[in-house]
Image (cartoon, rainbow, N blue to C red; front, top):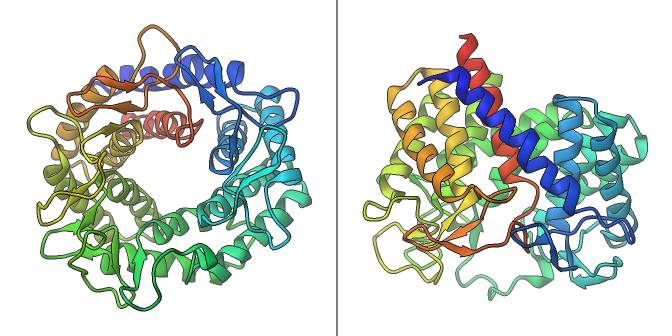
Length: 389
């Protein structure tokens, strides 16, 4: 693999194509915050504002300012979004709404704990940038609320009937393994250590099914397999994204065994999740091969492939595993060929099974300024480390 040219490729794509798209098209100068519903050319097609995406964009621009270059424009954009979130984003309990209208009035209740997790990430990173204690306070209060809610994340909004089939979901321990590092400058070291240990155990032991070598999306509240639609569900992208979080923790903890297991799970997930007929990674699967309940199961999504490239590059950098390099080149070829828009800025998000563009939007209810730029940044920096080894 020729690393120098690839390093330049990812850096250039981030700084000259993707970030300028969001800088030029997403800023709501009238009411604050960001537009995320942007068509292929960056025109706004809906003005609703989704807390996940608002917070992720704050985090992204604060991170760029912290780690790439101290550009005033980037910091101004991050603060612009944070001020909107601070003013309108949460209720009196520090639970963050799911969505707001353009002016900041709540549209959807704070049923989803991930609005909280991304808000904590955003304000934690912004505090690192500005040292403004107001941002630290928001991050901490939000994080405390996450810890209070984590045993029953949806609370009153949970649709499941109590105690019939109690399940817990993979996404929260996965996110917490990353979130605690984002705000570790604000919380006690012992709490960080406890959260890391718990997250590793949950991700790598509880949700890991040793018979198949795969990560389940849901297990019973006792950590056991549930032979149901939810219990058989696989989300290959989720599992592989979590594996680079685990690799980073393996580096931090000097645990080669954790890194090796994360790479093995990445390989097993790819072997199971790769579409042998049309290429690309399936969105949802059933661990027993039954039909999934998700009608979009065979779509190919941008974030799944971008997160996979990160995990494969980190696996190669840390272990020099040739299978990681082989898979990376295969995933990279598919990703750049199908998701990158050759005629306009930013990348497509949604393909059908054959790899044709399904929706030509560049941002919407779920896709914003996060996975593409974060992925390009992670690949760029990992490629740099590989070149230096």
